[in-house]
Amino acid sequence: MARNRWSQAGTFASQARAVLRQAGREDAFVCAVQARAALHRGDAAAARQELVTAQRLRHLRTYAEPHLAVQARIELIRVHLALADTAGARTLMREVDEILRRRPGLGTLVGEAQRLRARLGAERDPGTAGPSALTAAELRLLPLLTTYLTFRQIADHLYVSRNTIKTQAISVYRKLGVSSRAEAIERANELGFLRPSETVERREP
Image 1 (tube, helix red, strand yellow):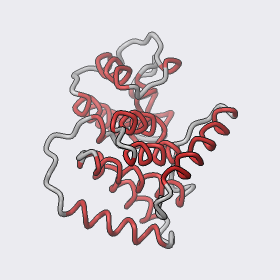
Image 2 (image 1 turned 60 degrees about the vertical axis):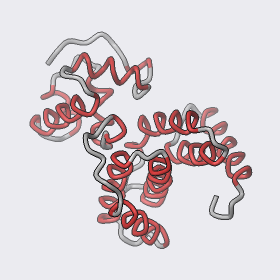
Image 3 (image 1 turned 90 degrees about the vertical axis):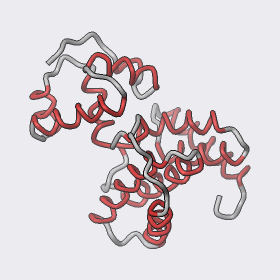
């Protein structure tokens, strides 16, 4: 993409997706490349669909694999900015900053992040955050909201406090524009943030 070889980039991304699917896997970085390629050919709808898939997968890319985690988010930030979604871009930028805080020596990615940060600093406040502003932690929580687990049990599963889970859940509800756990699951399904296999009959905590 940096060399303006968009057709080749799209082909490589499609090949990567095919290999991953054979192994029963998906990856946010591949989604990011596919989204940028879709935007280049003027297909905003396809780009948005790739963003939805990336939302579902992004939290799997952590500081344990810092280069891929940061690069995927940088490409996703560019897509969000191209779609005038500043809130989504800023959420991703905060995740980039957190990874760079833990893993600062990432070469040219540091400079790319700095340039995007400066660009975001010049953007207007997006106002109320929506679904695209869900954080990695909130996206990690979403599938667990569909289970029988109480907030306390989810907290134990994720090795955090119950208050942390409650705060994250409230933030999820706000960004999805709902007021309950059941409504959050329904809305997340509508948006494509949950796989069908992740939605089961559940009870309120």
